[in-house]
Amino acid sequence: MKHIIPVLATLLFISCAPAYMVVDSAEKFEIERYMGKWYEIYRLPNILEEELEDIVVRYELNDDGRILIINEGRLKSDNSRTKQAKGKAWIPDSKKPSRLKVSYTWPFSEDYWIFKIDSEYTNVLVGDPSGKHLWVLSRERRPEPAVISPFIEYASDLGFKIENFISGQVN
Image 1 (cartoon, helix red, strand yellow):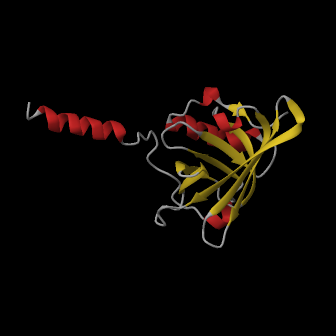
Image 2: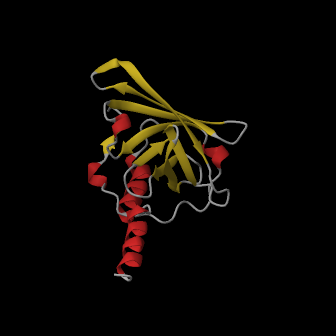
Image 3: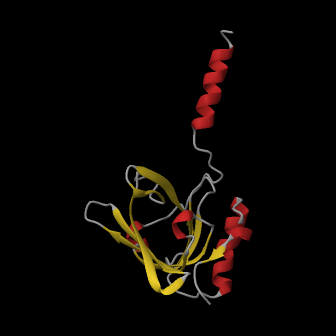
């Protein structure tokens, strides 16, 4: 019996620890260059955006180092209407600037990691290292498929279910 308690405590601790399917984020990342307007090209399904299309996200760096996030998209049921969600992000560890935390409802937050970004900061693969959330974003509304395909391939290599991707833009 005395050996069972430590084993149970260890199992409980392991089951409560976050399970990451991705352990690395982009090595080089400059938050200032990431700021601005991005178009959502693809995403894994998520509750926040399930009824939206033509999604745009804007990032604004505040003086205190926190980031304002504004997600906006057109309602699929009525293209004349939009829905907006505002959130905040921050870098919890300055040694790993590509690993952000995001919150849309305080005090809850989630990991938001930059997995892959091109050197011009025009295309990016971002998401949750647990595999729950993933987005391909671009500075262009309709980037060339050849430009986006390396990001999709990388997502697949990481183990994300890219067959579930939803297009964020209307053709």
